View 1 (cartoon, rainbow over the protein chains, first blue to last red):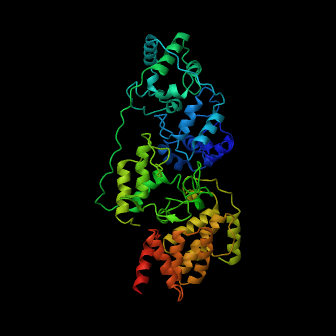
View 2: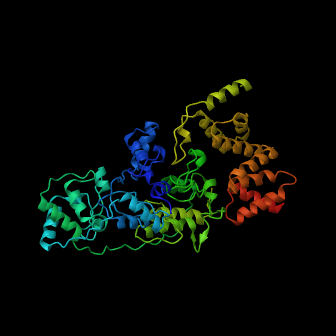
Length: 355
Length: 153
């Protein structure tokens, strides 16, 4: 098995996270590069950055992985294997990696040096109630979701980095050691405000976060694909509405991007290069390279579904915590495309992919 | 423009300030590297069907610093040669590029386009296009049209 440092490099954790060794170069760093465009400090004409900025809602912030000493190693390993939407205010989320259990455990052991596993104390019901009252009076729910406990809120339009990074507190008890929850309430690790809480208040809030009974989350069913459009769909429309918005960042042409065609072309995040680009008609037509080295069309049908559509629909399953075997959900690490976008692409495919 | 002036211009282009890397998308249209600008302009001319202009712009023998741009130039010149009635030069270059980009459907489609113009290449052109068609990898409508013509001939 590879040592942890090699695994960090293989899975390119430094494309997004700090605290995992040398950061990736700016142009390979998803968060810093987007941040530079948002700030206007990137090496591009101002008018172009002004045009891109409103679209930069993905990868605007990411937690540092430096010092995860209060985390539960077991949870980190399971999250690496089965990432889920931990931070509902953040559009991007941890991508699904080609990682096995041994590798996940090795990485978790590297990131969480301390292997203690504190049990959750037995809290008095009155203390938990007191914690809930404090949670509400301090308006913690204006940033944090607590699904299964509190009704979901609409995300605010203007969000600070702290709001974006605020985790869903449903996962606190499995993510963090109880003593670390108390520590964070006194001295937040991120940009969460400091509330100068009394010891009793810290204890009550920790009790609410660690022991409030969790209700099952109502899962919305995976929606059905929309019927094909009767109107003609052009490649230009598909390119503008889908390929440029969702695909080209990871499936680019390395000849036009300094040898790095992104994870879906030249490889990355531990995935082999598949040579797939959506930057032009000819590139989309050229398919992707399989394990046997042969190219195959991404529009070929799997049953009654074109392969590319199967990948887009698989993302709906992934965000519900279910992996589709052999079909990686796309776009990786982002919410599913809208059904209307998928309908547009599928209609273009059904119409013979007009050029 | 004289050859000497052309060489000077290209020397100036290839020694221009290197562009920053843009891994996400095609940002070469905004790069500071004039070497990239030259290729982008040639690609526009190619898209407009100005194949003689493409050859004039690029077929000058000067080595571009970025090998990938060198490959793009070779491809543009090769296909432009094929489309201006000089298939043999184009075929040779495309075969060379296909050693690097094995089984690239676009290059194979263009190779077939060149082969179809030669006396001895039609069968190979047909075989290439039929294989691509079977895999649903024909690069474009020109490839489809050529296959139809070859089957009819």
